[in-house]
Length: 292
Image 1 (cartoon, rainbow, N blue to C red):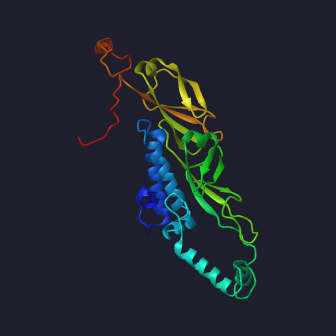
Image 2 (image 1 turned 90 degrees about the vertical axis):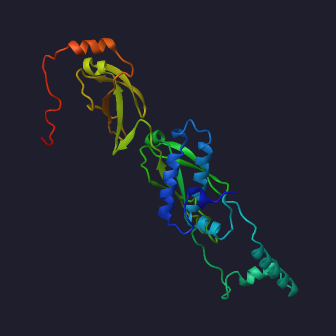
Image 3 (image 1 turned 180 degrees about the horizontal axis):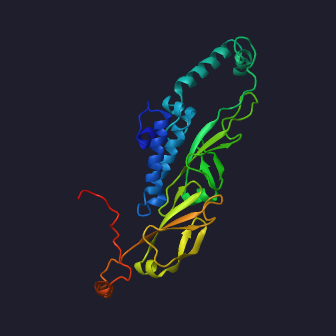
């Protein structure tokens, strides 16, 4: 059994906003895709999600604080309540009433009328999805503390922090009323290669000095698969090339070139540059300003 407050590193009196910030920070830090060399990352990530499912739901958090459920969402025995129910049943039996008779008499309050139908409460959950799954859309299965599962359709292009509403998947209604809804907040895990800016996907592409000077045709990854990109001759470090409609919802993929020098010494290249005189000399630092 685990304490959700300890797992997320928050206090019992912390606000919902503080708890959500702590959850997002931990979920992104321990996401299995970002920790392939840590075999315990998946289990840690699972614990973080389970703790957040308890603390992000006001009803479940209140029940946990009252000791009605444990850190895994399982029901706890409530001896005091069981005693009251048993005592009430014995008292009724002593006067010739069954528990059903007492419920019939007192179920609706002192007025003798039952409350009318009422809609069930909404419940809130959090779900972390991979960057590419958020970009392209996917169906993810969400395990709920009470043992149920929900198949959540993640629409293509969903943003970090987006709230999905699943009709009728919340708490059961009362007296025949409709159930509440499930609210699923989406947290998008960061990606090693891509980042999102609006509907555009941005990435850095390492290229060699030779590719920058002479130009080249190279393969680059996109959110939907690899494509070929033409690097023009004399491309400078930091130049940006655009792949149209390779982003989200018609956006582009912006590729920023990063010239990378070889790690090992290249004597032939060094000898060539030592003797090389450019046909069009220029000073790359001419525009810099500073104290004389």
